[in-house]
Length: 125
Image (tube, rainbow, N blue to C red; front, side):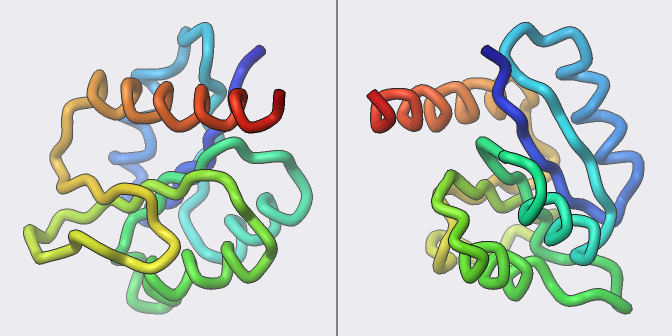
């Protein structure tokens, strides 16, 4: 079984790095999008096992905190991982399971995803 992970970031380079890192991963399938409209469309139409969302999206878009709120309003119960390039005090953001400060170790990200997707599996049994 492969878990589907949705990654939202307006920076195409971040999306490429994450996507390339997981390209041949036996457990995770990565879907990447650059804006909130694409994200919400996918959340409504595809089963997503976890979301990774940048907190600061393009200035013409809503910010990541508002997007996370909209994702949760769509009855999305699975894990959300926030990521930010700003070393601010993001210890708690409503609707977020964990916040990572960029740059972060991609092997650490995989371990976090594994932890949360394994927890999903346990709840379903």
